[in-house]
Amino acid sequence: TVGIPRALLTHTLFPLFSTFFKELGYEVVLSDIDPAMEFIANAPFCYPTQILHGAVLDLIKKGVDWIFLPHVNALPKGEKWLDATFCPISQAGPYFIGTAFDNTKMLRPVLNFREGYEEDYALVEMAVKQLNQRRKIADHAFRKAIEKQKEVERQFIELGKKTLEELEKTNETAIVLVGRSYNAFPPETSQLVPKKLASMGVSVIPFDFLEKTPVYDIPWYFGNYVKVALDLVNKKDNLFLLYISSYSCTTDTFIQNYVRSEMKTKPYLLLELDAHTGDAGT
Image (cartoon, rainbow, N blue to C red; front, side):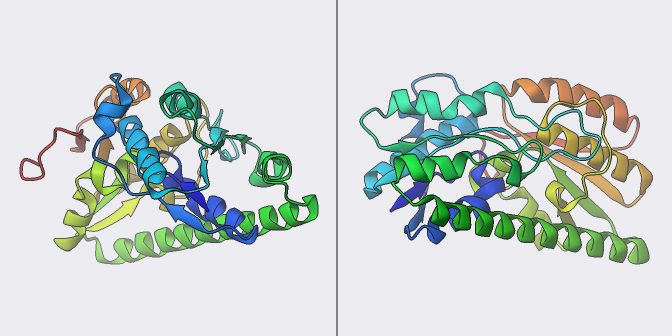
């Protein structure tokens, strides 16, 4: 069995990761979040990184054979994006988790998909060297995984286009949700605010349902999507921005100031949610 922590970039890359291991013949176990995460971290990490500790602890208790925890340096960038990288803390996850949970079998490849998923074969090399897979089988699994990831991303974009076209006709109010996938989407970090809005009949469009339209000077993958969303909501009177973040995020310190200046007088909502945030208060 291969355990995948339900944390950080798993919320973006799960189709790729899970398909790859399933094609290799492994059972894939997606973690829950063990509530003891605060005590395991033993350091003032941001909330998503605390959750990573709880996810790994859950997989250890489940007794999986391997825990997959890659160092993801960058994801495919838009045509004119300066870069598509991530904060140093999220990139360092495999290393401080390895210290917190020594004597645990982990798969920790360094993945750089900046120029496209097909341009980095680190997953194949990991399968060959650490899992003793034949290269031909690993290559096939990697191709299947890329196909799955791209198909999911295509479906997202199509749904996003369709929703925006419908809103153009109806002029109903809708929310564009931004943040990082591991802030804006999981129930632990989002307090299910997007779902609560949807239950009230308000359309919510996640940032990764938007096309990677040109951005020029932002190095962060998720920051680029914030710029794409800003450009969209500033053009449409019926679209509004919801930004979900967590306390002590360094990159958000810069991006939030940028949002304030770009939004000018248009209302938007920034929610900084953490482990201590009560659902009733939200």
